[in-house]
Amino acid sequence: MNSPVRASAPSVWSTRLRANWLPIALLVAILVVVVLAVPSFFQSANLLNVGRQSAIVGVIAIGMTFVILTGGIDLSVGSILALSGVTTAMLINSGMTIGLAAFLALLVGVALGVLNGLGVAVLKIQPFIMTLATMVAIQGLSLRVTDGGPQQFDNSNSFFTVMGSGNVLGVPGPFLIFLVISVLGVLVLRYLPFGRFVYAIGGSLEAARLSGVRTGRTVVLAYAVSGLCAALAGVMTASRLGVGDPIAGSLSNLDAITAVVIGGTSLMGGIGGAVGTVFGALMLAVLSNLMNLIGISPFDQQIVKGAVIVIAVLIAAETTRRRFRTRRPDATRVPATATHAPLDPTLTSSAR
Image (cartoon, rainbow, N blue to C red; front, side, top):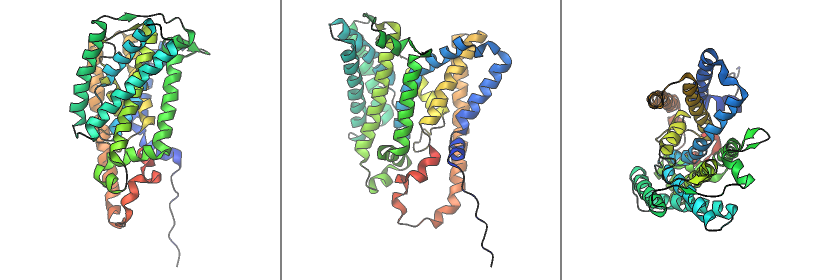
């Protein structure tokens, strides 16, 4: 009797491409339009500008990816960005070294992220409500300590300048920071237990708890990562502007969520990853740059971005439904003892 022919297993790269096809397809479509409509887009100076534009939102979006993968959301990242920038400026003006001031500003972001995580994981407050409350409170704190005005400081330090507006071997410093944070995000989500726990919680909080995952600690750490990334973006913004602005980053939370959603991460949690977020952030930067080159007004640009979000969410939702419909016939063949399946990286790799 002839044995059945086994289908060859898909390669790792093909699996990853299928998992991130949405942001890749959207980015390619936009680039095709750019080639036809605005050939000057591909001038080296403009491409470097696009990389610089994507950096701030991209760094925040990587941290936001961790939170959204757990099924939560963080609306406070824009306020954390502003407060970390203000903290950096005020500490430098008080005589502290730039390096120590920036480090303490990052710790402020981590502390605020932990506060959000404790509210969600321990006090069981809905993520939207908890982070909305901290967003308002942190914004008020930034305005209070600065009396509503920007805080100028001496940012002549060459290394600190690179974080905001300088170049390294011709590449924008902020973009290099974005790349480093992106690589770290991909590695953590794909290869570390913490990353697998994040996916497991997003898939099913109760199932993750029953599987032995310390769900509360994982959620708090996810929000801490988001706060750290927002604070880093705040230090980068302060370096670029040369001031600590208490109202900087007022729309950063929306831009970061947009990049994550366009990148294919489900707002329900458990599906997506940092790779898609990178493409989402780049696509937003390309789209904004293209509209600036064409001469579209900033008001109309917001309308276009809103339409892109709706289209991306609809496509992502349909992709998720198809994925579950494809897996459903095999559900009856999964043994009842496979309660630890969400923690197996081979089962979640296709979602990253």
